[in-house]
Image 1 (cartoon, rainbow, N blue to C red):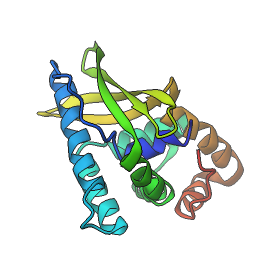
Image 2 (cartoon, rainbow, N blue to C red; image 1 turned 90 degrees about the vertical axis):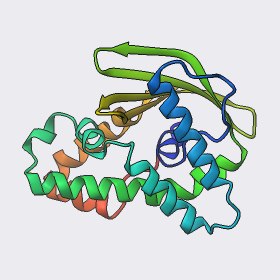
Image 3 (cartoon, rainbow, N blue to C red; image 1 turned 60 degrees about the horizontal axis):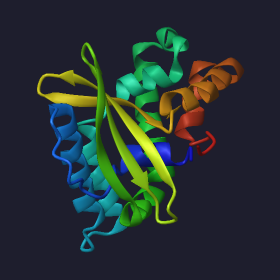
Image 4 (cartoon, rainbow, N blue to C red; image 1 turned 30 degrees about the vertical axis):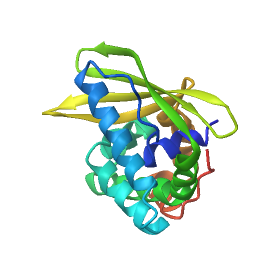
Length: 196
């Protein structure tokens, strides 16, 4: 199940929902789903081209800085500005490298529907979908967003309650204790984390 979490970062669900989203955050998520579906199903593109297009699209809607800060947790305050920049770039590259292929392969067969429920707390929103894999397994995915200008930015994902940032925080905290901040950044650059 945990492998699904980063895959969702790269390839959002792939079956457009018949549900007409009532809230702008849900409408944006449906647009994101449809856009990634179009890329994933475009047989004229190579896998590398699909990965690049999904990454470029995701760059507009994923807040990599906030995701990184939440994934590192309290030690993030000890990072210098350069270390933060280096970590964000390395973490993004690691996730893309580790999960892009499986995400796009899974996108071809998965069925996803946007669920009508959502939660709202001040400027934070949880939008929910249900993913059904080719084997018939079902997972509920919560996309955690906040609004900045006209855009809802994603800062976390939860699959059946398992949080992307929490899963990585455990690994990052252990790495920081063992190798320090620069050693952790080097490990992330080398894609030295366990695949979730």
